[in-house]
Length: 320
Image 1 (tube, rainbow, N blue to C red):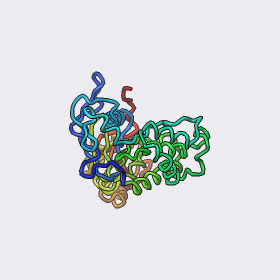
Image 2 (image 1 turned 120 degrees about the vertical axis):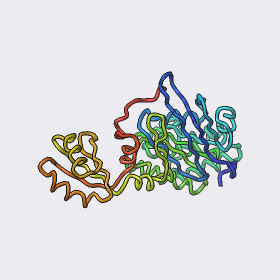
Image 3 (image 1 turned 90 degrees about the vertical axis):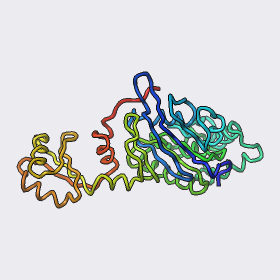
């Protein structure tokens, strides 16, 4: 079990959080909580509010209104108490490329206040746990992206926090290194019992979370387990390519009395049994269709249903 974790307290509690940059409201009355030992994800495109929320929870930014607490400590009023209870891993590793892995960890152990007599043991334990024992004397600058990220995870939990905050942890990693990172995070959680909160804009990463909160333009548009979120969309998604998608969508609505809308130049239909619907569509509109596909809902489909636009359509960035 992680040292210093208040077992009765909620790792993260956010109530009606609001923050704005001038006229731009980055967070709009956001509320949620993270349970002990939970792997909680914040999924959203650029400009959705993830970075602002991360900065508030890590005590780098005070919210305009609302409240955020870590293990019962207010992030604005009690930042020192919060900082001693969280570990933070940013998008870019906070390591010195010219120092070895072990030198980096020993340096950060001192900065984080790890007692001198415990430093060597903790560094060795983490290197072993994260599969870095054979890299301890290698310069960080010589490591691959995946190994460097593992070393940064070790840095983030040297002081044995109760909550690990990860901001886009797999940014810049290839798919294999990304999967390896998430296996490592799951292993760490199992060994330490800490809660993990991660921000990401990568849909597949949302599937690794116990629960997922989806943000768009500062609003919390959905929150549940990934499976429940997908199930709420419906049985299947039917997509039709056509020369005149608007005309086809209108005709389908009028003649078949089902909801059809145009998204990214294609007709989109959410239906309980798309495979049974396809023959009916083909019989009625074959001459107007170029291609038709059926698939089970994804987290992208959840986002589309809740916002009316695709995930990658949102290009606005949050002010720095």
